[in-house]
Amino acid sequence: MRVIVLVLFLLLIFSFLYGAVITIGPNKEILVDGKPFFPIMQWLQSRSRMADEKQYGINVFVGQGDSSTALQYCDEAKLQGVWAVPSWDASQVDSVKNHPALLGWVFGDEPDLQSNQVPPSAIQTQYNEIKSKDPNHITFLTLTAGFYSEFSLPAWMGGSDAYYYEYPKYTDVIGFDLYPIYGWCRVDWVYRVGNACDELKNKYGKVNIKLTKKQNTYELKCFLQGNCIKKIGREIKSTTYHNLEIKKEREFYKCSIIFDL
Image 1 (spheres, rainbow, N blue to C red):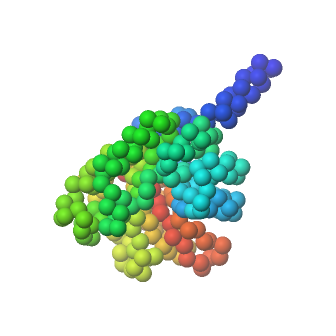
Image 2: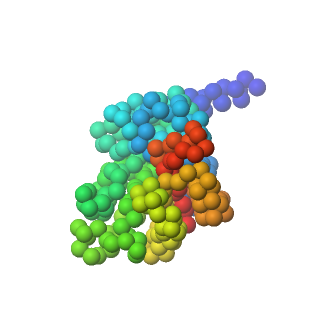
Image 3: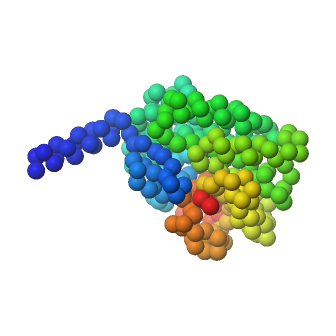
């Protein structure tokens, strides 16, 4: 019995000192030390809100919504019993690469946006740097929905969608933002979320797709029942909320859902 207790104690110490190994599994699921993990993530929150937001089931916080360092963000995540995905910063990687609350790193948001104009080659350079400095964690990248055929390509791409074939090569998890309700107040555009998801999969051949929209609780329930819940276990690998405000039944909130199609 003492031997078993000692072994368990040593395993806990090892986990505390070295953190978990995060990978993508054969079914495109996120694995934590080889075991499937279903993240319920929230984007761009300050560390002061983690304690409150975890009450809604949030278990991963992506991108610091304040001036926190990666270490400060991870420390708060550990304190709250959740995971952190800080914004990539090569100067801070050594301080957290063995942190027990670190799940991965997120690239700069929407590199394809007209005002950003970050080519895939730049993402590739960052991706290679991340993997060389921290091979035990995964990367997250979110695009706009500029690739979708019902939208226009970003002007800076000169009419070519070639970059959208390249971005997925240099990240472990890719996503896109689409706001039919929050951005345009167009319920009749909700179908575009699923269609763009299929298009990213079938045309550009990548999985782990992040969708974003804003709806009230009834609308969200209908959307989930019609487009998401039926796919859990087979396709959906995680769910992400953004600027969560669900303290009252009628409040509006914006959320994004990451699919693995």
